[in-house]
Length: 84
Picture (cartoon, rainbow, N blue to C red):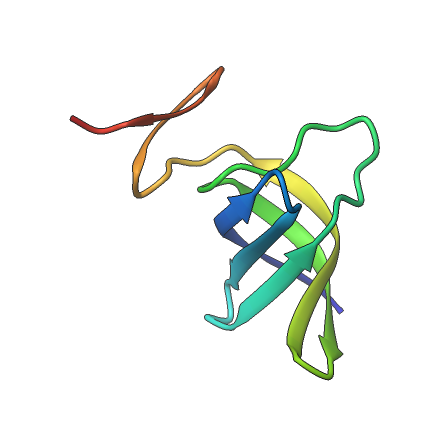
């Protein structure tokens, strides 16, 4: 089932992150599905294929819907700039 949500956390070195779905459920994203595309950033709106694994809900085939604002800073072309 295709769902939409927002990137809550993403660790580039390990390619592991969390998506909060519009249904308020938490989904784990592992690895990068989009070859040749930049990794997701906190605050971005995404669509994904929702699934279930033995350790919880998973997001697969994650695709960017639009860039958003991070609760931790402002999105810039180069990434997230912390609020000061």
